[in-house]
Image 1 (cartoon, rainbow, N blue to C red):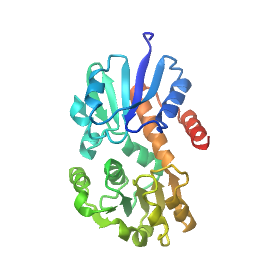
Image 2: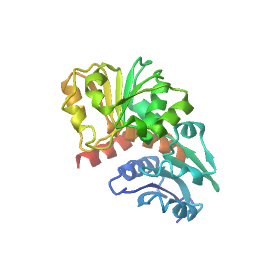
Image 3: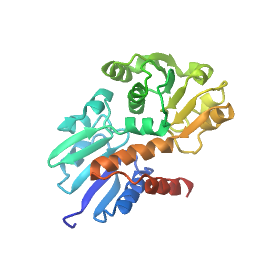
Image 4: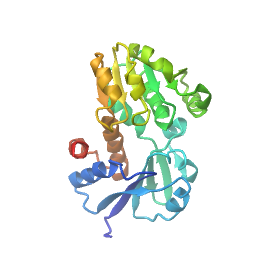
Length: 272
């Protein structure tokens, strides 16, 4: 590797499907960072510590996807306040030998929604790491008491603790209640895995607000199709992916992210 060469990668299990390499490589090309490379590396929770221990000074950063967003935290030297409050790290920055954890998912959600003013009501589907980031994003947009729909309220302890750290006060209900209620919210964010929201789509009532479905495979999702058919506005999950990756590029390279180039690369991958 040349002196200017730097490395970065997305880690997860499984990770072969990740679109992060296309986004980051497009950014490097547009920025003229010819010595930079970005890969996808399949790493399990059990193998994460040894992988991180083996990294050298050529590394600029890591992107973390599931199931590693919490597993990485004990391995870091410092966790930025937002990531600490959310309880999820999707970005690791290398500052010399110091590993710093950050969260760009919150930025990705806010930027994807693209709202001008505060929102009065919101609903969140799911209780995982992305749901925690969504609560932080909604708080930034002025909604601190969203309704969160989960499979089982008794199993949402991690999200409840994250909400407490953020100072937000969600109302928790079961997913079975969602189809009849979410249509009244200004903003709905589904953080459920691909196809997990499909049964809700079949029972969706009239809608008024904006839906961000973080799943983007298939595109459009069944929930997105049903939402649009019921009269609501839809933001595709690929927009969150784009904007969280753009913030990672900025943090890792020190350059403003070339959004147009990254967006074009993402669209090419999604339509291939």
